[in-house]
Image (cartoon, rainbow, N blue to C red; front, side, top):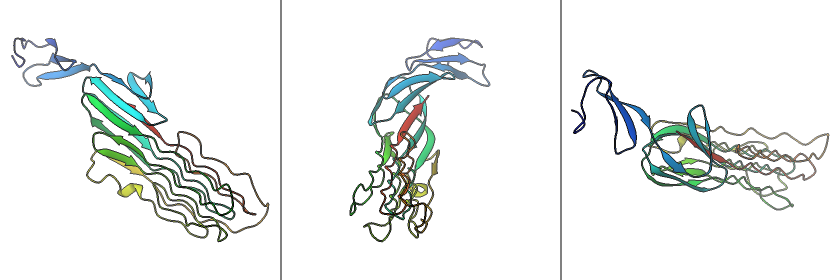
Length: 239
């Protein structure tokens, strides 16, 4: 037979050393995988719709100890902080999704932090951190760019997964050009918009990006108001 010591009558089942259950479907089709058994750890583990899901809201490792799963993944970079005063908002973290087969091993997962805001005059808001899966080569979702404040404050908006907004203009999005040579992925990132001029209703409370979304922080609005912090990124692996 196709497998040593195993018959090839149609409907024959075998459980091989790779923890895969296979069925012989006849000479025209051959052996087909019926089920693959995977043991893996890392992140917060859950299940839905017959899939196992590992959610990382902080950096760690995805470790496969048994099986060779085809992993679907979603990677989101941290959001950039918003600018001060009359300013542009922080850029959202870039996003990458795709799938890749992996074997036993430990794969480093990095979750990008959200950029911190400029809490005092003279501070510069920070861009978001990159989120990365080493599968085994790095697949990166870039952190969002920081928003640019008015001329009272240092620092222009920066490029990123999605760039920060600016006053009066913004930088460029870098995510669509990242991860060259990696097949089977889709990448998302867009340039930020320009900021608006000062006006009523005066200073407004800043808003932070939501955790686990890579959302950019909102811009400050008038009278040297600080922008919001960027939201942390997230990495999700499913098989």
